[in-house]
Image 1 (cartoon, protein in one colour):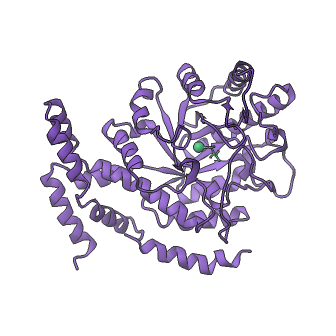
Image 2: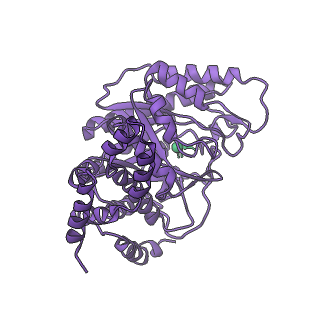
Image 3: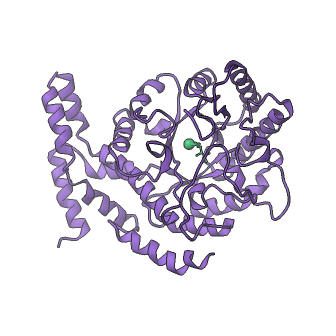
Amino acid sequence: MPDLEQRYNLAKEQFAEWGVDADAALQQLSQVAISMHCWQGDDVTGFEGADELGGGLAVTGSYPGKARTPDELRADLDKAYALIPGDHRLNLHACYAELDGATVERDELQPEHFASWIDWAKTNNHGLDFNPTYFSHPKADDGFTLSSPDEGVRKFWIDHGIACREIGASMGAALGSPCVTNIWIPDGYKDLPIDRRGPRERLAASLDAILAKPYDKQHLLDAVESKLFGIGSESYVVGSHEFYLGYAVKNQTVLCLDAGHFHPTELLADKLTSVFQYVDQVLLHVSRGVRWDSDHVVLLTDELNALAQELVRGEYLGRTHIGLDFFDASINRVAAWVIGTRATLKSLLRAMLEPIDRLTAAEQSGDLTTRLALLEEAKQMPWGAVWDYHCERSGVPASDAWLAEVKRYESDVLAKRN
Ligand SMILES: C[C@H](O)[C@H](O)[C@@H](O)C(=O)CO
Ligand SMILES: [Mn+2]
C-alpha cells in the first residue's frame, strides 16, 4: 500500500496531465480561514442562563456532552480545530459573554466581557468574528427587535448593536484581523401583516443608527443577514433578502448570504456573481437545509461544490468571508464541527483542482461538448489523495482517522459531563 506522499505524487502527475498544479491548489487552500461557529458546541444556549432558544430557531436532539461553560466550549473547539487542516477563525455570539456571575444587560456589554475569548484566540492563532444576539431575550419575546413599534425596545436593541460593533472592533484590533460583525434579527409575523412598510422603515432607521459610527475596516467589517422565514415568522420577515441586498448596496456593508435562508430550490451559487457586481464583500453562512432552514451539518453536496466552484472560478475568495451556520444536537457536537469544516475545505480543494483554463477555453470556443465531458470526468480525478496528503502535512488525521480522536474525547471528556 503506497503511503500518502506516494499517493499524492501519483495524483499530482495525473492532475498535471490535466493542466492543473496540485501544489498550487494546496498553497491556495492553506490561505483559507473558515469561521467556525461557537453555537454548534452548546445548541445556541450561550452563558446568560437562557433556558429557551428564541428567534424562531430550533435545535433538535439531546446527544450527551454539550458544553456548559466557556472553558468547556473552548476545550471542545480546541479538539475540533486540532482535527482540521489550516488556521481557522471563531464566530462568537454576544450571548457567549463571560460575566462572572454579574448581570450585564446586552446593551451594556463591553470588550472586557470577551477578554478570555480574545486571549484564547490570540494564543491559538484564531481570528474572531462576532454577532449581536437579537433572540433568546425577554425584549425579543414578541418577535420584534430593531423594527419594534415600541421606541424603548428599539432603543435597547440599537444600543446592543452599537455595543457589539465596539466589541467587534476591539477584537479585530487585538488580533490584527478584521472582525466581521453580522446583524441578523428574527423580526416578523406568523400571519398576514397589514403594515409591511412600517417595520421595514423602522429597521432601516435602526440600522442607520447602529452603523453611524465609522470604524477602521482593518478592525471591523459590518455585515447584514436576510432570511426568508423562521418558526413563528412564516408570513413576513422584516429583514428579507431584497431589504438587505438594497441596504448593503446603498451602504456598502458586507452582505451575508445564508444557504438556508432562501426557498429550498434557490441556491446561493448562482447569486454570487450577481451580488459581487454591487457589493464589495460577502459573508457566507454555509449551512444545509433539509426541506426547510433546518441547519443540518454541512456535507460535500452538489450544492456546496457549486458554491465553492463559483468562489474559485470567479476569483472571489479574497472578497468572501466563509462562516459555518448549523446546529445539530443529535450527534457528537465536536464531530459536527469537524465534518462541516472539513467538507467545506474539501469543496474548495475540489474547485481549485478543476481544469479551469481548459473548461473556459472550451466554453469560449463554443465546444460545449468538451466542457460537459471535462466537468463529468473531473468528478473521478484523485482529489482525495491530495486532501489526505494535505491533512497529513498539516499535522491532522487523514481520511476518517479523526473520528477515533473524537470518540476518545467523547469517552474521556464529554461522557463525564451530565
Ligand atoms: C445563531 C445565528 O445568529 C443564526 O444562525 C443566524 O445566522 C441565522 O442564520 C438565523 O437563522
Ligand atoms: Mn445564518
